[in-house]
Length: 404
Image (cartoon, rainbow, N blue to C red; front, side, top):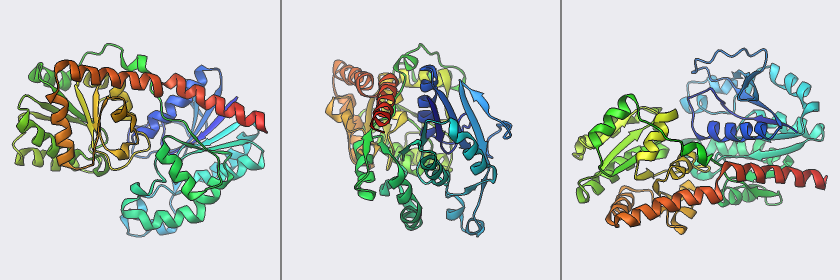
């Protein structure tokens, strides 16, 4: 089958988080199963990627076409919030290319909410009688609307709801996303298929290099708590530092690493918090880690903490658990199984609750923490393995085909 994914940014873009990894993992897995996948994505002008927009480029078997975004007139107004919205039009090549490729496509899948491209894909796919699927990946959850809440609600009612209505199936990553979908379009068909990770890949032996190797040398065998994500307010790096400082007063042997791209300039604020709370000698700040260093960090860590205020389904948490990290996170991460299976704790997103949960993890016996880490790995194997996720995705497509 030929799958067409339309999304935001795509590999090799490095300036955004989870959706790039989850969408590319699904696309590459489908290619390995013998299917053809074309990805239509937005050119990220902040990247150094100079891929030729006049033709596809192929990355790990996936055909990728990049399109430039063209802002609306109102996005040119001196209002930073509007400029940051992801609803910009795509250039004039977009719909022409879409009409040209559509006859060869079997399944269209919008891989992100609030994309302008969703409108054309949903309309043209139905015109050609193709299967149309829709992933929101957390974007339609009102808990994540933030300062743009009013604008997003207006846009959702005017544009997104008709798109949702046209979809054959709305694919939710979690039960929370399924509830959000049903709140907007009660009559639509909703299926839950989570993100997945390749557990074998995350267990490949990894050796720390460069700055990370130096930090590991300083830490030694001390218990290690980590935060690794995009350094944005929603992901709670500041909450983590305050919570860790509380926990470290009760567990003085604890060490911490914060790693991630400094997208909103929060690193300086977090460093000041660490200084104010007297933990600068046991909190290490690093840029985003990738490849072997990322695996080395997760494999060395004892506890992964993400006090997030909103996720689709956190890839960072799944990757950490695949490496055998126990987890402390919040209900907004949408992985309630963490608490249920004894892989960690799910608590309110504040420094007191997070700090107490960290202390609780390290107050257990060595065998107790080891059991939580084993439970985390088992949870990913059973519920979030990439192989199982791709199986469920293809089974859904086959059911839709059989029903048509």
